[in-house]
Image (cartoon, rainbow, N blue to C red; front, top):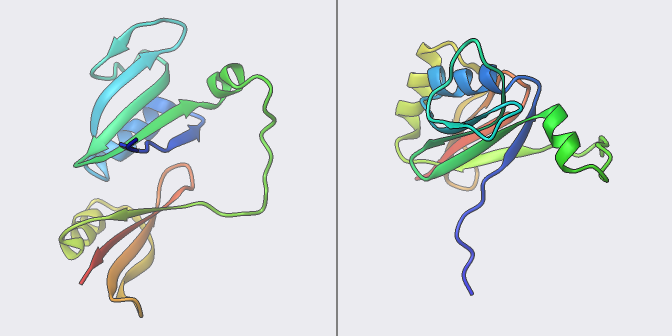
Length: 140
């Protein structure tokens, strides 16, 4: 038995806007998108269309964005509740200093500056266009 990958699903208001942010600001590539109300899988986004899902990737990291209304339809017996807990997506990278400078130059909102931690990691945190926090970290 082997666990292969994990793809976090981000609940978002606007899949196209979120996908564009991750592509333009964080350098992720679009893997696929599903046009709302269809079974049409697309490899690029069209500005005039709405999307229910999209998957982006950078390196081995995959992220899925799910339109909130679609999520509510798919998971019909689940109430969305705020538990008071926070979620931080921690991404292990190489060359964290270069990634920090790349994001800084693209105007990404950095909420924790690049620092070396007590555990021997170099890391920084950003906030995406939906308020999700992503940590980018490298073991020194």
